Length: 180
Image (cartoon, rainbow, N blue to C red):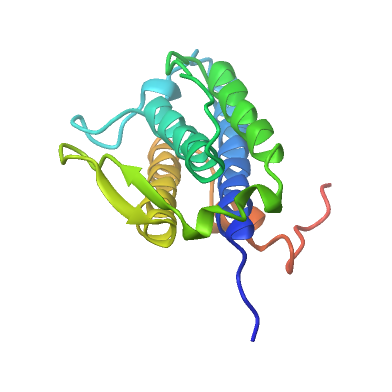
C-alpha cells in the first residue's frame, strides 16, 4: 500500500500553493500597471469587514513559514508583516518559497510523532498531533487565504480561472501547456 509522505503533504503542497499565489501576484501587478492603478489591488477586499488582499498573501506566507518552524523545530525569528505593495508581496512569497526549499524530507522524520502547540483564535493554546495540525489547521488555513486572494482578484476583474489556481497542484501528472 502506498503512503503519503509528511514532506509532500506539507512542504510540497505549501510550495504549490505559494507558487499559485506568486502567479496571481504577477497577474495582479500586470493588471494594476495596465490600468494605471498603483497598488490598488493590495488593499482590495471582498467585503468591508474582511482582511485585504495583502493580508491574505501575508497570512498564506506565514502558514508556510510556521509549518517549517513547527515541524523542523527551527527558530526562524519574526517576519514583520509590513509589506504593502504588490512588489513587496511578491518578494515575501518568494522568501517563503526559498525557505521551503531549505527543508529536506529527513528534516521531518521526527515530526510525525510529535505534538504541535497551536493558538486557535482567542482560545488558549491547544495540543494537536502533527496530523491534526497539518490536515485540520495549517493546510485548510493556507487554502482559505489562497482562495480568498483568488476571489478578491476575480472580483476586481482579473482574468483568472480554475487553471490559474490548480496548475501547480497538478503539474506532476498534468504538465501545463507550453508558453506561447
